Amino acid sequence: MESVVKTIPSVLILLGPPGAGKGTQARMLEEEFGLVQLSTGDLLRAAVAAGTETGQKAKAVMDAGDLVSDDIVIAILRDRLGEPDCARGVILDGFPRTTVQAEALDDLLAETGQKINAAVSLEVDDAAMVARISGRYTCAGCGEGYHDRFKQPQRTGMCDKCGGADFKRRADDNAETVAQRLQAYHAQTAPLITYYDSKDVLQRIDAMGDIAAIATDLTAMVEKSMT
Ligand code: AMP
Image (cartoon, rainbow, N blue to C red):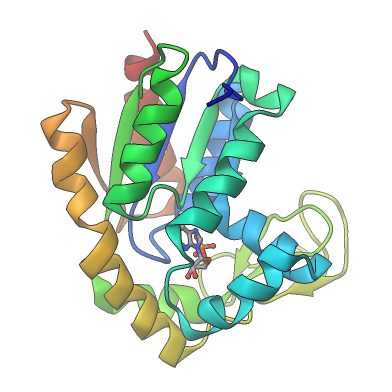
């Protein structure tokens, strides 16, 4: 198999159920450490919006809150990891989500002798997740995340980061789909906590607090894992 993965100095994984704050924290780590946030959910949503073959196959599965097939997700991750900007180091947000994906990532990194610095489990209560997810939205221009209750823009209707006035909500952020996504997390993704623990790269973080406090804990943890 041809190696597409160049040398990537740091590989961080964020694990956690939908709504745990993986995307928000990954964006902060991206700014703080100059790493690249790599979200398979974002890549799939882009494929859906572009109407590609992958997007057409993934759409119904995503709308139902189920997991897209390992083959599809591994292929898009592999392509993205091969792009030049990933040579700065990556934060994987929403990947891997199954043991098959975790093993595929190990194989991919083994091709160039790289290791995972840390797999951080963002620990939260299921009950809080539904409230977090149902109120969230993002700036359509720059992707900055907001929430009806927990984080509104400083000026109503204007993004704090880029000044944009267009906001969007995800199609799968509704009560039924969220329940299914939580179920998929517990059945298929939570076993990865044990998987990474057995490889001695697991870190746990209490992700029930406010965004800034979690970011402080996470930054300290990541700094340690990169030395
Ligand atoms: P996310 O943005 O990470 O919450 O992902 C949104 C949806 O995309 C999920 O509910 C899945 O349907 C799909 N998805 C994202 N990443 C993966 C993955 N690693 N494996 C399978 N499906 C995924």
